[in-house]
Length: 232
Ligand SMILES: [Zn+2]
Ligand SMILES: [Zn+2]
Image 1 (tube, rainbow, N blue to C red):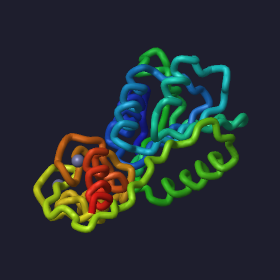
Image 2: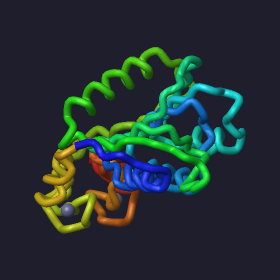
Image 3: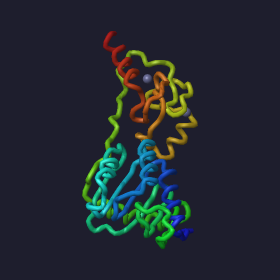
């Protein structure tokens, strides 16, 4: 069941939406300036590899330094829609539709109202809202596209390494270029199948490295495997 929200709980719910997102975040707002508290959370989400869809409606309202900051995110797509007046914030599970703007944060003097819906309990409303969001997004101009991580293809080696490591938890597993997770981590990756979701280790040498399902080796391991082939 949808939940009614007042000012403070709107702020709290938007924070949760950004902080808990594992796959997608959507920010639909006419006024694109964002309070530091939300901005920090968004930056963390970007680093986790969460796709951020940001649609705004008033070009002049965005401070330049914040615009540059958002533009530097790897996983953000920014769009502009001149007729946008709706305000909506969502991730893959929850959505807040509310009067509050993101440059406000728990400001008690502002009397805001909103509703929180979840995909699990309000599936029809959630999906109707998503259709509207897709229509708004489709009609908006692209300002900045997502930077896709260049997918690694399997290095041409005569012999693959025998031992590998889970790119999420570093557990020792068999080396398998197409299955770089241990069973437990694979199960949790499979829920969203986000091939750009940021992981922590090189599949071949185990060192801390920003990897992902489609980019599972550090540069050194990738090069080493290639060179093995060339020498032979
Ligand atoms: Zn694992
Ligand atoms: Zn490596």
